Length: 284
Image 1 (spheres, rainbow, N blue to C red):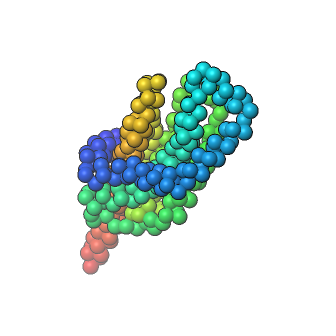
Image 2: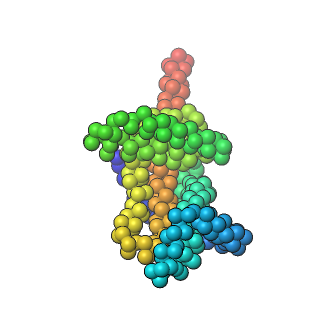
Image 3: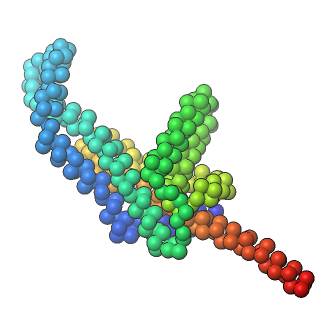
C-alpha cells in the first residue's frame, strides 16, 4: 500500500510539471484544428444534406408551419447548424482524445523514466502493434465479462461492484502494460502482474471513478447547456489531465516495482556463487 500511495503523490506532483500541463492542452488544440478543417472543407455540403433530410420529413414540415404561425419560424435556421454541431462534436472529441492518449502515454513514461529511473534497462519490445493488440484483447475480455455478468446486475449490491471491478481490471491491464512495455520483458511483466494483481486492480478502479469526475460539470441541468461553449473545453481538458495522472500513477508504480524485482533477482543470483566460492576454499 505504501508503494501505491507513494506513486499516487508523485503522480500528483508530476501533473504540475510544465510539460504535462502543456500536453494536457493537446486535445483542445487538435480539436480546434480538426473542427476548423472540417468546417472549411465540408460544412456547407453537410448543412445542405442535413437540411434536405429534415425537409423530407412530413411531420417536421407540419412542426415548422406551426412554429411559423407562433412567430418562431426563424428557429429552423438555427436548428440545422445546431444538429450538425451536436453530431460532430462527440466524434471529434473522441477521435482527438484517442490520438492524444496514444501520443501522451509514451511521452509520460519517458518523462518518468528519465527523471526517476535513468539507469533502468529497456528489455521490452515497446511495439505499437503489441500494445494495440493487448488493449484490444483486454477490451474484448472486459466486454465479454460485462455481458456474462449482466444477470448479476439485478442484485442491487452487485451492480455497484461488478462493473467497477471489470473496468478497473481493464484500466490496469492497459495502463500497466503501456507503462512496462518498453522496459519489462514478458516474464518480468507476467511476474509483476501476478505479484501486484490486487494493488493494480485497486488503482484501476480508483482511476475509473476518477475519470468520471469531469462528467459532473453536466449535472447542473439547463445551466450546463447554456454554458456548453465553456464547459465542453473544460471537461475535455480535465479528462486529459486525469488520463495523464492515471498514466503517471501506473508508470511510477510499475517502474518502481520492476526496479525492485530486478534488484531482488540480482541479489538472489549472487547467493549461489558466493556459497560455491566458500566450498572451493574449504576443499583447497
